[in-house]
Length: 342
Image 1: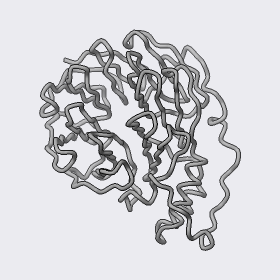
Image 2: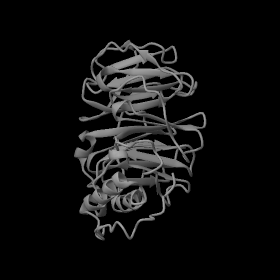
Image 3: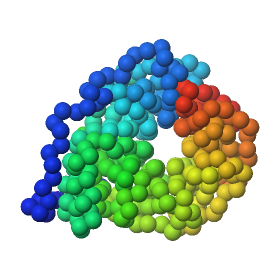
Protein backbone atom coordinates (compact mmCIF):
# COMPACT_ATOMS: atom_id res chain seq x y z
CA UNK A 1 0.00 0.00 0.00
CA UNK A 2 1.62 3.13 -1.27
CA UNK A 3 0.73 6.76 -0.79
CA UNK A 4 0.33 8.40 -4.20
CA UNK A 5 1.92 11.85 -4.28
CA UNK A 6 -0.60 14.66 -4.83
CA UNK A 7 0.39 16.12 -8.22
CA UNK A 8 -2.66 18.26 -8.78
CA UNK A 9 -2.66 20.27 -5.58
CA UNK A 10 -2.90 23.50 -7.53
CA UNK A 11 -5.97 22.31 -9.39
CA UNK A 12 -7.76 20.85 -6.37
CA UNK A 13 -7.72 22.68 -3.08
CA UNK A 14 -8.75 20.36 -0.28
CA UNK A 15 -10.60 21.81 2.70
CA UNK A 16 -8.77 21.65 5.98
CA UNK A 17 -9.55 18.70 8.22
CA UNK A 18 -10.63 19.67 11.71
CA UNK A 19 -7.67 19.69 14.09
CA UNK A 20 -9.74 18.57 17.08
CA UNK A 21 -10.71 14.88 17.02
CA UNK A 22 -14.28 13.95 17.97
CA UNK A 23 -14.84 13.30 21.66
CA UNK A 24 -15.18 9.56 21.12
CA UNK A 25 -11.58 9.49 19.84
CA UNK A 26 -10.32 11.44 22.87
CA UNK A 27 -12.21 9.81 25.72
CA UNK A 28 -11.60 6.35 27.15
CA UNK A 29 -14.21 3.61 27.04
CA UNK A 30 -16.34 3.63 30.16
CA UNK A 31 -15.68 0.79 32.59
CA UNK A 32 -19.02 -0.75 33.51
CA UNK A 33 -20.50 -4.13 34.49
CA UNK A 34 -22.95 -3.60 31.62
CA UNK A 35 -20.05 -4.01 29.16
CA UNK A 36 -20.24 -7.77 29.69
CA UNK A 37 -23.65 -7.81 28.01
CA UNK A 38 -23.00 -5.14 25.40
CA UNK A 39 -23.02 -5.76 21.67
CA UNK A 40 -19.77 -7.39 20.55
CA UNK A 41 -18.75 -7.38 16.90
CA UNK A 42 -15.47 -9.32 16.81
CA UNK A 43 -13.57 -11.98 18.74
CA UNK A 44 -10.06 -13.41 18.28
CA UNK A 45 -7.54 -15.71 19.95
CA UNK A 46 -4.40 -14.28 21.54
CA UNK A 47 -2.53 -17.42 22.52
CA UNK A 48 -4.98 -19.20 24.80
CA UNK A 49 -6.75 -15.96 25.71
CA UNK A 50 -9.88 -14.75 23.95
CA UNK A 51 -10.29 -11.05 23.13
CA UNK A 52 -13.64 -9.59 22.07
CA UNK A 53 -14.51 -6.07 20.94
CA UNK A 54 -17.65 -4.12 20.16
CA UNK A 55 -19.63 -0.95 20.57
CA UNK A 56 -18.42 2.16 22.41
CA UNK A 57 -14.84 0.91 22.55
CA UNK A 58 -15.64 -2.12 24.67
CA UNK A 59 -12.92 -4.79 24.76
CA UNK A 60 -13.42 -7.95 26.82
CA UNK A 61 -10.88 -10.60 27.86
CA UNK A 62 -11.34 -14.24 28.82
CA UNK A 63 -8.64 -16.54 30.20
CA UNK A 64 -10.95 -19.54 30.70
CA UNK A 65 -11.98 -20.24 27.09
CA UNK A 66 -14.96 -17.89 27.16
CA UNK A 67 -16.60 -19.00 30.39
CA UNK A 68 -16.08 -15.63 32.06
CA UNK A 69 -15.05 -12.18 30.82
CA UNK A 70 -13.57 -8.95 32.17
CA UNK A 71 -13.20 -5.50 30.63
CA UNK A 72 -9.92 -4.11 29.27
CA UNK A 73 -8.66 -0.52 29.22
CA UNK A 74 -9.32 1.21 25.88
CA UNK A 75 -8.55 4.89 25.03
CA UNK A 76 -11.52 5.48 22.70
CA UNK A 77 -15.30 5.10 22.68
CA UNK A 78 -15.82 4.20 19.01
CA UNK A 79 -17.33 0.90 17.95
CA UNK A 80 -14.67 -1.71 17.14
CA UNK A 81 -15.45 -4.11 14.31
CA UNK A 82 -12.34 -6.27 13.81
CA UNK A 83 -9.49 -7.88 15.75
CA UNK A 84 -6.27 -9.58 14.67
CA UNK A 85 -3.46 -11.06 16.80
CA UNK A 86 -0.11 -12.33 15.51
CA UNK A 87 0.92 -13.86 18.84
CA UNK A 88 -0.26 -14.01 22.44
CA UNK A 89 0.62 -10.38 23.15
CA UNK A 90 0.60 -8.39 19.91
CA UNK A 91 -2.64 -7.47 18.21
CA UNK A 92 -4.71 -4.77 16.56
CA UNK A 93 -8.33 -3.62 16.61
CA UNK A 94 -10.05 -1.54 13.93
CA UNK A 95 -13.39 0.16 13.77
CA UNK A 96 -15.48 3.25 13.20
CA UNK A 97 -14.07 6.72 12.50
CA UNK A 98 -11.03 5.13 10.86
CA UNK A 99 -9.79 3.85 14.22
CA UNK A 100 -6.86 1.45 14.56
CA UNK A 101 -5.62 0.42 18.03
CA UNK A 102 -2.64 -1.71 19.03
CA UNK A 103 -1.96 -3.85 22.09
CA UNK A 104 1.31 -5.38 23.20
CA UNK A 105 0.07 -7.05 26.37
CA UNK A 106 -2.57 -9.44 25.09
CA UNK A 107 -5.37 -6.90 25.04
CA UNK A 108 -5.05 -5.58 28.60
CA UNK A 109 -4.30 -2.05 27.35
CA UNK A 110 -4.45 -0.37 23.93
CA UNK A 111 -2.95 2.65 22.19
CA UNK A 112 -4.49 4.64 19.34
CA UNK A 113 -2.31 4.33 16.21
CA UNK A 114 -4.55 5.76 13.50
CA UNK A 115 -7.86 7.58 13.14
CA UNK A 116 -10.24 8.95 10.56
CA UNK A 117 -8.78 12.45 10.59
CA UNK A 118 -5.47 11.16 9.30
CA UNK A 119 -7.18 8.62 7.04
CA UNK A 120 -9.45 11.20 5.39
CA UNK A 121 -6.56 13.58 4.72
CA UNK A 122 -4.27 10.91 3.28
CA UNK A 123 -7.03 9.30 1.22
CA UNK A 124 -8.19 12.61 -0.26
CA UNK A 125 -4.62 13.64 -1.05
CA UNK A 126 -3.94 10.39 -2.89
CA UNK A 127 -7.13 10.65 -4.93
CA UNK A 128 -6.28 14.22 -5.89
CA UNK A 129 -3.59 12.77 -8.18
CA UNK A 130 -6.10 10.61 -10.07
CA UNK A 131 -8.60 11.21 -12.83
CA UNK A 132 -11.58 13.57 -12.63
CA UNK A 133 -13.78 10.99 -10.89
CA UNK A 134 -11.09 10.30 -8.31
CA UNK A 135 -10.60 14.03 -7.73
CA UNK A 136 -14.31 14.50 -7.04
CA UNK A 137 -14.25 11.58 -4.64
CA UNK A 138 -11.17 13.00 -2.92
CA UNK A 139 -12.89 16.35 -2.50
CA UNK A 140 -15.95 14.70 -0.98
CA UNK A 141 -13.89 12.58 1.40
CA UNK A 142 -11.96 15.58 2.64
CA UNK A 143 -15.22 17.45 3.24
CA UNK A 144 -16.84 14.54 5.08
CA UNK A 145 -13.85 14.01 7.34
CA UNK A 146 -13.32 11.08 9.72
CA UNK A 147 -16.63 9.26 9.31
CA UNK A 148 -15.55 6.09 7.43
CA UNK A 149 -15.30 2.80 9.36
CA UNK A 150 -12.82 -0.01 8.95
CA UNK A 151 -14.53 -3.40 8.66
CA UNK A 152 -11.56 -5.77 8.83
CA UNK A 153 -7.85 -5.91 9.58
CA UNK A 154 -5.13 -8.45 8.82
CA UNK A 155 -1.50 -8.79 9.88
CA UNK A 156 0.90 -11.30 8.38
CA UNK A 157 3.55 -10.64 11.04
CA UNK A 158 4.35 -8.02 13.68
CA UNK A 159 5.18 -5.40 11.03
CA UNK A 160 2.98 -5.84 7.95
CA UNK A 161 -0.76 -5.29 8.03
CA UNK A 162 -3.77 -4.12 6.01
CA UNK A 163 -7.06 -2.56 7.10
CA UNK A 164 -10.09 -2.20 4.81
CA UNK A 165 -13.49 -0.56 5.10
CA UNK A 166 -16.31 1.54 3.70
CA UNK A 167 -16.26 3.13 0.23
CA UNK A 168 -12.99 1.43 -0.72
CA UNK A 169 -11.11 2.56 2.38
CA UNK A 170 -7.80 0.66 2.49
CA UNK A 171 -4.59 1.34 4.37
CA UNK A 172 -1.44 -0.66 5.05
CA UNK A 173 1.56 -0.56 7.34
CA UNK A 174 5.05 -2.03 7.07
CA UNK A 175 6.27 -0.86 10.49
CA UNK A 176 3.85 -2.38 12.97
CA UNK A 177 1.32 0.41 12.63
CA UNK A 178 3.54 3.39 13.40
CA UNK A 179 2.63 4.70 9.95
CA UNK A 180 -0.28 3.79 7.68
CA UNK A 181 -0.28 4.41 3.92
CA UNK A 182 -3.32 4.53 1.68
CA UNK A 183 -4.15 2.11 -1.11
CA UNK A 184 -6.69 4.53 -2.56
CA UNK A 185 -5.52 4.44 -6.16
CA UNK A 186 -3.89 1.00 -6.19
CA UNK A 187 -7.03 -1.14 -5.85
CA UNK A 188 -9.08 -1.98 -8.97
CA UNK A 189 -12.27 -0.70 -7.34
CA UNK A 190 -13.59 2.12 -9.58
CA UNK A 191 -17.02 2.13 -7.92
CA UNK A 192 -15.51 2.61 -4.44
CA UNK A 193 -17.34 -0.47 -3.22
CA UNK A 194 -17.27 -1.36 0.47
CA UNK A 195 -14.41 -3.69 1.39
CA UNK A 196 -15.59 -6.10 4.07
CA UNK A 197 -12.72 -8.56 4.50
CA UNK A 198 -8.98 -8.96 4.08
CA UNK A 199 -6.95 -12.14 4.63
CA UNK A 200 -3.48 -13.47 3.91
CA UNK A 201 -3.03 -16.95 2.42
CA UNK A 202 0.22 -18.56 1.25
CA UNK A 203 2.02 -15.28 0.60
CA UNK A 204 -0.95 -13.60 -1.09
CA UNK A 205 -3.39 -10.99 0.16
CA UNK A 206 -7.10 -11.28 -0.60
CA UNK A 207 -9.81 -8.62 -0.26
CA UNK A 208 -13.56 -9.23 -0.54
CA UNK A 209 -16.41 -6.76 -0.70
CA UNK A 210 -19.64 -5.58 -2.26
CA UNK A 211 -21.11 -6.82 -5.53
CA UNK A 212 -18.96 -9.95 -5.59
CA UNK A 213 -15.70 -8.02 -5.46
CA UNK A 214 -12.67 -10.29 -4.98
CA UNK A 215 -9.11 -8.93 -5.23
CA UNK A 216 -5.71 -10.60 -4.87
CA UNK A 217 -2.17 -9.32 -4.43
CA UNK A 218 0.77 -11.54 -5.33
CA UNK A 219 3.44 -9.01 -4.34
CA UNK A 220 2.73 -8.28 -0.70
CA UNK A 221 0.17 -5.57 -1.41
CA UNK A 222 2.14 -3.45 -3.88
CA UNK A 223 -0.57 -4.16 -6.46
CA UNK A 224 -3.92 -5.94 -6.63
CA UNK A 225 -5.85 -7.59 -9.46
CA UNK A 226 -9.54 -8.46 -9.66
CA UNK A 227 -10.42 -12.15 -9.55
CA UNK A 228 -13.22 -13.75 -11.56
CA UNK A 229 -16.02 -13.76 -9.03
CA UNK A 230 -18.52 -16.61 -8.71
CA UNK A 231 -21.18 -14.35 -7.19
CA UNK A 232 -22.52 -10.83 -7.68
CA UNK A 233 -23.77 -10.32 -4.14
CA UNK A 234 -21.77 -9.02 -1.21
CA UNK A 235 -19.03 -11.06 0.45
CA UNK A 236 -18.91 -10.31 4.17
CA UNK A 237 -15.89 -12.40 5.09
CA UNK A 238 -12.97 -14.61 4.15
CA UNK A 239 -11.59 -17.67 5.94
CA UNK A 240 -8.01 -18.69 5.14
CA UNK A 241 -7.61 -22.25 6.40
CA UNK A 242 -4.26 -23.72 7.34
CA UNK A 243 -4.66 -26.31 4.56
CA UNK A 244 -4.53 -23.56 1.93
CA UNK A 245 -8.28 -23.56 1.33
CA UNK A 246 -9.93 -20.16 1.04
CA UNK A 247 -13.62 -19.58 1.77
CA UNK A 248 -15.57 -16.47 0.74
CA UNK A 249 -19.00 -16.07 2.35
CA UNK A 250 -21.74 -13.52 2.67
CA UNK A 251 -25.22 -12.51 1.58
CA UNK A 252 -28.16 -14.94 1.70
CA UNK A 253 -26.17 -17.95 2.84
CA UNK A 254 -23.82 -17.89 -0.12
CA UNK A 255 -20.38 -19.41 0.37
CA UNK A 256 -17.67 -20.45 -2.09
CA UNK A 257 -14.46 -22.47 -1.78
CA UNK A 258 -11.16 -22.09 -3.60
CA UNK A 259 -8.25 -24.53 -3.42
CA UNK A 260 -6.10 -22.65 -5.96
CA UNK A 261 -5.65 -19.21 -4.39
CA UNK A 262 -8.78 -17.74 -5.91
CA UNK A 263 -8.22 -18.84 -9.51
CA UNK A 264 -11.45 -20.86 -9.39
CA UNK A 265 -14.34 -21.18 -6.95
CA UNK A 266 -16.85 -23.91 -6.11
CA UNK A 267 -20.22 -23.11 -4.57
CA UNK A 268 -20.86 -24.59 -1.13
CA UNK A 269 -24.41 -25.73 -0.43
CA UNK A 270 -25.04 -24.24 2.99
CA UNK A 271 -28.76 -24.98 3.18
CA UNK A 272 -29.56 -21.59 4.68
CA UNK A 273 -30.94 -18.37 3.17
CA UNK A 274 -29.54 -16.30 6.06
CA UNK A 275 -26.44 -14.20 5.47
CA UNK A 276 -23.19 -15.64 6.84
CA UNK A 277 -21.38 -13.21 9.09
CA UNK A 278 -18.39 -15.06 10.55
CA UNK A 279 -16.13 -18.09 10.22
CA UNK A 280 -13.43 -19.88 12.20
CA UNK A 281 -11.05 -22.84 12.02
CA UNK A 282 -10.70 -25.05 15.07
CA UNK A 283 -7.32 -26.38 16.15
CA UNK A 284 -8.17 -29.83 14.78
CA UNK A 285 -8.92 -28.47 11.30
CA UNK A 286 -12.74 -28.39 11.43
CA UNK A 287 -14.27 -25.27 9.88
CA UNK A 288 -17.30 -23.36 11.14
CA UNK A 289 -19.57 -20.77 9.56
CA UNK A 290 -22.01 -18.66 11.55
CA UNK A 291 -25.09 -16.88 10.18
CA UNK A 292 -26.33 -13.50 11.31
CA UNK A 293 -29.13 -15.32 13.12
CA UNK A 294 -26.59 -17.33 15.12
CA UNK A 295 -27.03 -20.61 13.23
CA UNK A 296 -23.88 -22.74 13.11
CA UNK A 297 -22.62 -24.70 10.08
CA UNK A 298 -19.79 -27.24 10.40
CA UNK A 299 -17.34 -28.84 7.96
CA UNK A 300 -14.89 -31.66 8.57
CA UNK A 301 -13.81 -32.09 4.94
CA UNK A 302 -11.83 -28.86 4.51
CA UNK A 303 -14.85 -26.79 3.52
CA UNK A 304 -16.15 -28.99 0.70
CA UNK A 305 -19.45 -29.48 2.51
CA UNK A 306 -21.17 -28.12 5.60
CA UNK A 307 -23.87 -29.50 7.86
CA UNK A 308 -26.28 -27.38 9.84
CA UNK A 309 -25.73 -27.67 13.55
CA UNK A 310 -28.89 -26.49 15.23
CA UNK A 311 -29.47 -23.05 16.75
CA UNK A 312 -25.84 -22.35 17.61
CA UNK A 313 -25.71 -19.06 19.49
CA UNK A 314 -29.43 -18.40 18.89
CA UNK A 315 -28.73 -14.65 18.92
CA UNK A 316 -27.76 -12.13 16.22
CA UNK A 317 -24.09 -12.93 15.67
CA UNK A 318 -21.16 -10.98 14.21
CA UNK A 319 -17.91 -12.77 15.11
CA UNK A 320 -16.54 -16.25 15.75
CA UNK A 321 -13.31 -17.70 17.16
CA UNK A 322 -12.08 -21.12 18.25
CA UNK A 323 -11.36 -21.46 21.96
CA UNK A 324 -8.29 -23.17 23.41
CA UNK A 325 -10.40 -26.11 24.60
CA UNK A 326 -11.98 -26.92 21.23
CA UNK A 327 -15.19 -24.93 21.54
CA UNK A 328 -16.34 -21.73 19.82
CA UNK A 329 -16.76 -18.19 21.14
CA UNK A 330 -19.45 -16.08 19.47
CA UNK A 331 -19.51 -12.29 19.44
CA UNK A 332 -23.17 -11.31 19.37
CA UNK A 333 -25.40 -8.27 19.75
CA UNK A 334 -26.22 -9.56 23.23
CA UNK A 335 -22.71 -10.13 24.49
CA UNK A 336 -20.43 -13.16 24.26
CA UNK A 337 -21.60 -16.77 23.92
CA UNK A 338 -19.80 -20.11 24.09
CA UNK A 339 -21.04 -22.93 21.85
CA UNK A 340 -20.00 -26.40 20.69
CA UNK A 341 -19.35 -27.42 17.10
CA UNK A 342 -21.75 -30.31 16.25
